[in-house]
Length: 260
Image (cartoon, rainbow, N blue to C red; front, side, top):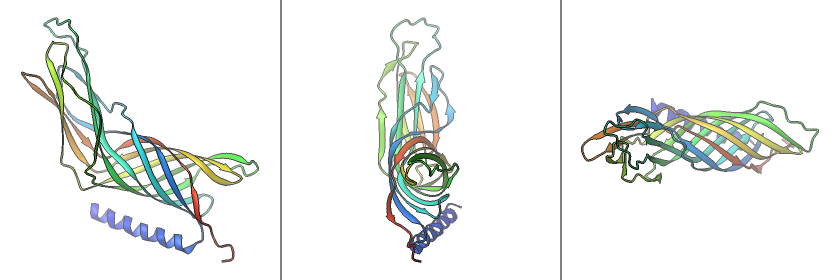
């Protein structure tokens, strides 16, 4: 199934190249920069001394570059290469008091980790509002969707530490995370809405809000709640899902030949 999808993507990339060299539309290169928030699915929650909080907000960089073929004023075809963050962010919050009546200092703990995947996206963009050509400066909206493939990266990011602390029962505990079953490739469904600024009818800076829906398992994670007398476990499946915002600017590298 995955191999079939890869073959289909390769065929679409070939067709994309054919359209570009036909020189019937405008070709732009689009550097992008912003942030994203990785999301994960909780599959097991064995915590009893603390409440699990999944998908805590954890912001990581989003950057990439794209090649866009503008077939006409309404439709564009894009080939994008960016860093897709496949990760999780969770915490344990202590709310239920223990029977031993401990009144000392306690602490909640958080942990987050993600792999900086190499994400290749082939997408179609459609303009959904009209551009006011009578004005020098105007804004319009477009939507973008397609298919994305993540290639496994050995690079891992982690910005939140997990240190020993004390819970409401007066027990010392810490969180220990373990990543496993990491896949070589993964598939995502990119969904994006763009707010595009235009000056004298030409696209300028754009702000995009995206949601990448993971379609296949990228890897799994166990986060153990460990105290001297027992261990409790929460497990997660990471599919490369993320939410984010990026800004980009199109740079024209090829315009149609009007004499053709």
